[in-house]
Length: 120
Image: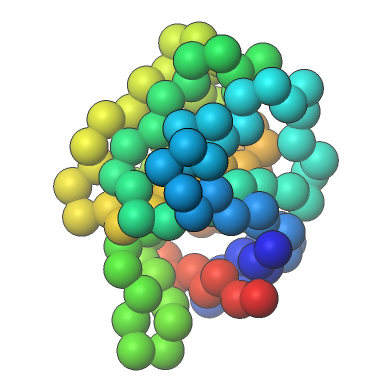
């Protein structure tokens, strides 16, 4: 379990599960009915996601590799990805994806170029 926080501190802290194996990344949030407002999923070492077999919309924040201080830079944001419809392939420079409840990115004010930290 990780916590996600932003540099500006204005965003809520989300508790993130970690999908570290290929199968866990493929399965992701499939089968779940929803995410609580403070929940999410981190998919390390990936630059793409799919929405197949999903039951609800999500926001996805793609991040780069961690820097020396552990911060990751937001390289791409995709909001309100619809179940069964939204497919995001090969985000250049991404080294991980953070899946959050739909509307979280706007509510938290996360933007491309922001720094985020994933801490245990």
